[in-house]
Length: 198
Image (cartoon, rainbow, N blue to C red):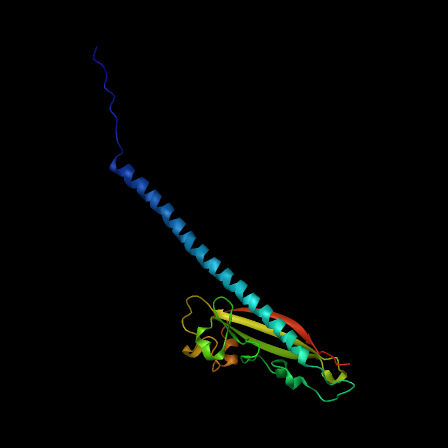
């Protein structure tokens, strides 16, 4: 009786190609998922920064009301024109001018730090403000609704309007309103109360 020799068989070329194909499909799915995750994380970061900028603007407008004390019983003349930004009440959306005293303005860099109008080209985020009367100041109890919109360029949308920096002083505010497909927006609202003098 002759002993049987067991023969070990290796993988055939077909089996090897099938295994490589399945592996490649799995790896390509993981790479695609990673790309989506990176994009979603970037958008979440930008959204958080824009929300922080909007809240900072609402606080600045509320602080601006500290200079708004009259008319009052002692002084019947309005001093709303002594405020930095609230004096623009009644206008539609406006791009607020940079205040060197407060070191705050319309433009912000990628980390949410204020950028002066001189360095508007460094801005990644831009903000506009709109203020409307809730109660006029005639009674000495004025109240202004303050709205802020912060916007930034969507991925893949190329250059901002007119190939200018996103927060250039020369960019028309009305032009931004009509291009929601070009920008992401965050909107926040609050109120600024007159700081009534005794």
